[in-house]
Amino acid sequence: MLPVRRTTDSWLPDIFNDFFDNSWMERPTYTAPAINVIESEKEYDVELAAPGLDKEDFKVHVDTEGNLHIEMEKKSENNEGRKRGRYLRREFSYEKFQQTLLLPDDVDAEKIEAKVEKGVLNVHLPKKEKVDKAAALKQIAVK
Image 1: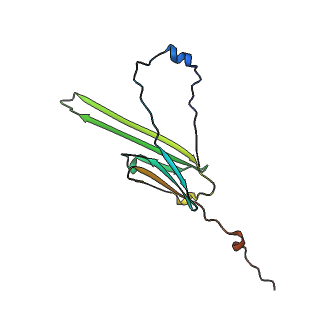
Image 2: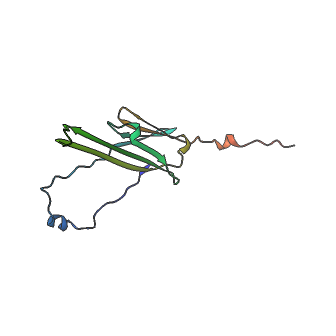
Image 3: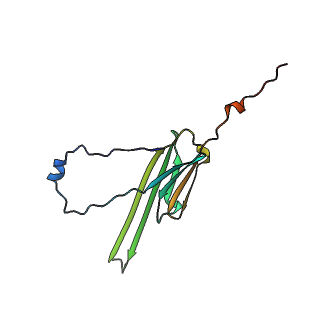
C-alpha cells in the first residue's frame, strides 16, 4: 500500500528566498498526522493519529480506480470575552488533511470499515479470500 505523493517543490531558486528575506515573519508549522499500515495474513489495517477529532470530521472512500481516500476537516471557533459586539480575543482554528493510498489488488473493497476510537482513525481492509484452485476444480464423472 503506497501513499500517493504530490510534489510541491518550487521552481524558484533559493536566491529569491534570500532576496525576499522574511525570516522575521513567524511561519506557521504544518504537520500531517502519523499513519501506520499493518498487514496480516487476512487483512490490512490503517491507523491515522487523530487526537481531538470525531467521526464527523472524516470522509473515507474508495474511488473507481481503487484508491483509498482519507479526508479530515475540522473547523472550530473560540470566542472568549465577547462584550457588546466587540471582540477582546478571538481565535479560529482550521485543519484539513487528505491522504490517498493505492490499495493492493487483494483488498475486498466491499468490506472496508472505518471507525474513530481513542484519538485514532482505524480503517480495516480485509483481503479477498483465496480460492484453492485444486479444491475448486469440479470433478466430472465419466459415463
